Image 1 (tube, rainbow, N blue to C red):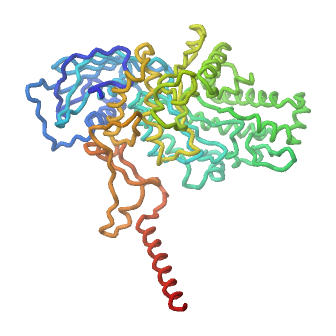
Image 2 (image 1 turned 45 degrees about the horizontal axis):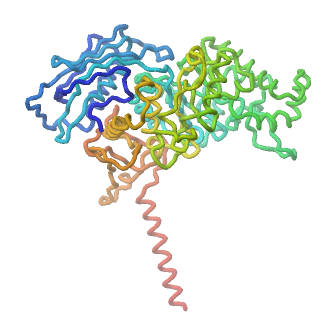
Image 3 (image 1 turned 120 degrees about the vertical axis):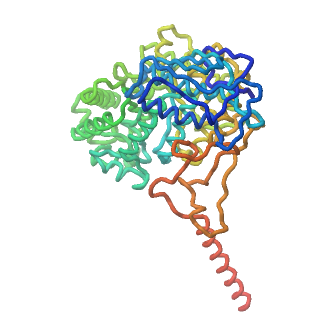
Length: 595
């Protein structure tokens, strides 16, 4: 395990052979940039997470080592009140080699956030509990501008706090896009002010929704960490949860003519286009990013069952010179969708899953999100095909983290190119035989976490640190990051760092250990107080490992139950169990007396 290793690996980093001692109680982040909230709040966070588990009562002894007392931060372009966008400048430099104090220099607030994270990685604690700052010079910037995590909160609802915990970890890994798959066939938790019935009728329950205020809170929370929030409203398919607007979905039929659950929008109805204009207009105003994901995947079965076999839709197609070619109706849908999106906000860039491009119905200027392919050759052939047609691309195929395998799946693929061990570190979005112009069209990638078998109880350990391998692939120089074996000592330290900060991140490799082990707080049954055993947010109460972070408002280890969550307690369950046990005992005793 390294000491003071930085993850993801900076493009240029030079270590000196010595370290400065550092006193957490007196160390200061300083800047001449006053009144800049995004920087002020970042300083507040990094005073805590740079020294996980530190308590003011801890002793400090520097011995003969020189102590460094501060880091001076310079932001060349000054403060910003904007939201992060694809074009943001995340470059920075660090010099921690001077005993007079360290320096951080960045062109923008976004680069400053990345620098503060790297600086915190240079800080480490020895076995005696003393803190040290590794002497280093760093010059760094990301390889790709789009480095994302996709969360699916439609299959299993994720609380606001769980989403924020994941955003914290994204920032610590220098990931900068939260792709939010908000709605799907199963549920519609997004709250529309104009169409409240969409969530009232489409959400699992009235508790399992995201209010406008909560969504704005998540967007602002992400902004403070330099993270863009790109929503996905998957259309026209995967729309089974959209039944809150009458007539929006086409009636569907199997091959025998029996009714099926509707799952695709009916584009032949005029009132549906008025709905889509107003609905997406509201969402475009709420979300601040210039990119917006409109889905578009897995529609072929729905087009057959709900368009071809629907007499009203097929009659409309005949009357509009489409015959029985549902691809023409799909093209009609996208043309009209683009028109209405641009009518409301013409600066929006539309992202679609790659089927929209494979079917040649993608709007001009849109971005292809690649997710198909079984082998590495298949994946790279898809990237070549997309970029050869002049489309910009985002890759996710290699990084479906909802799939789990035995062993260290973050590292290598086998010699045949199949993903038997995972390919998270080895997969390179531009590793196809294309021109330089084609490869320049690759914006980056995302690691999806589909929610069929994931909720707040297992999101964090399943995601991290496996997603850390994706983070380094999308940030770092590929020439310096060819070996998972060489990366492992830094990843080991980084995983331990995330755990000491209060996150339940799973072991990525074979048996090993961290200086501080993970621990939990058990419920206290001694005072018969049910509230001590109530599970927060549907799960067990957890605490960071020995020496881990304290639970404060800004501390990601703090958890609280969402409004309206179940108050069923362990002691109540135990009482019920005892009641049934006693009852059964009495019954058996009576039977014995009878016989």
